[in-house]
Image (cartoon, rainbow, N blue to C red):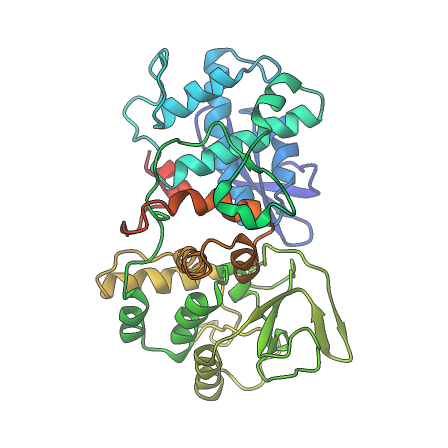
Length: 399
């Protein structure tokens, strides 16, 4: 056992060949992810990049995707300072992307290629990693080739702000179907018929109407909910909630967004404002009046309903498992919480005729460019509504 530069001890690890992904238990109770060598020393280049995503699920996903790439570099005897764009395109071809070039010696023999949901994520990870290296003075030529932009005629309403949007030369090319992890039609209604507890109906409704990430939902405190008009916080006239980043929650739930917030006179202000629907308000009062324990000292919204820890804050893994079981009972397969977010963002884009600013604000995205990269390129074939697929981490583990 040894201590990392995060100020925490390196805990349970997942072996992935020589390099491995390592979970870090930090002194303040939080968790982080990094990549280490077989002898236990930290891979400094990967560690510096992953720190940029500290405190979010993106860090864990990128760690698993990046470790596969670093192992490939070792096998190919390529140094970070000498990697070229063609090498990265070849690596994406090995992972499953369509590229017209020799791929070289077989790699990952007997393992499945990345799926439609994992390939764009892997491309974003590689681009971000090498742009970070370029910013540190390593392989600046590759950084220039990756840092490209394109003119988007479909988003002409943004011309007064920008004339181009970022693009990723490593991302898979060609026409895309709708986001592969969207919920099937009617999934919400079928889930509501399947779940039994008022808490679970709240989870389905708030994920479907609010577009919340599961960490945001499980990290909510009662004081974050302003479910009446003209609330004292003054953030929004309509009923709303405030998503606040609290790294010390006892259930390990963390909001990805880190908007500043504060508490004054027992009133929370700041954070990320999310409007709530009448259905969200209804399920809240049903849950609070029938299942929420009296005298809960932690002040968090979602609690465990059964077992030895009844009344304690409900962890995101519990919500994921509940949705997975409910999805199978409803004949939908393993439903993932993030599928609700993909569905509502795509629906907002359809309703707003592709207005990225509206979709950005509705989903709490960091930028309109991120919405464009993730969703807009998939709007060309809006009629295709595929079933659910595995997440990048699950696909990686299956391989």
